[in-house]
Length: 133
Image 1 (cartoon, rainbow, N blue to C red):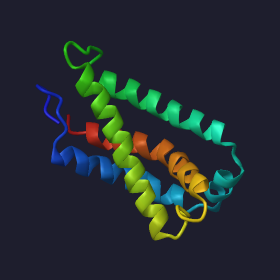
Image 2 (image 1 turned 120 degrees about the vertical axis):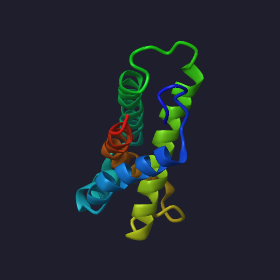
Image 3 (image 1 turned 135 degrees about the vertical axis):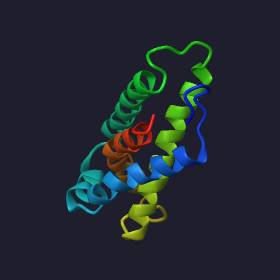
Image 4 (image 1 turned 30 degrees about the vertical axis):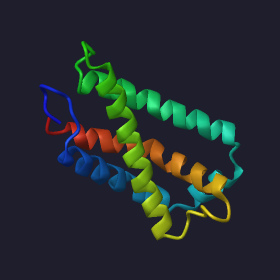
C-alpha cells in the first residue's frame, strides 16, 4: 500500500496472507477451536465476526489513514473488507488442509470455525501489512 493513494497492491495481499497464516495456523490446529465452533451459538459467532471487523476497521483507520478519511471512505471500507476476506480465505485453506473444514457435511460449523480463527488472524494480518508503512 502506498501512503499517497491507500490502494491495495500485490505485496499487501501477500503480507495479509502471511500475517493470517502466522497466527491462524496455530489457532486452527487446536481442538478447543474445533469444539467451540460446534458448541457456540451462531449469533455469538456473528458477534465475534462483527467485533473483529470493527476492531480491524479502527486499526486500519488510525494506522493507514492517520485518523482521517478525506475522500477515501470507499477505499477504507474496501481495505477493511478485503483484509478480512483474504484472512477468511487463508484460514479456510488452513482448516481445509488439516481436514477441519466440513463445508459439505456441516457448513455452519465450517463457517463458525473460520470466523473464530479469523479473529486473531485478521489482526495479525493487518499488523504485518502495516509494519513497512
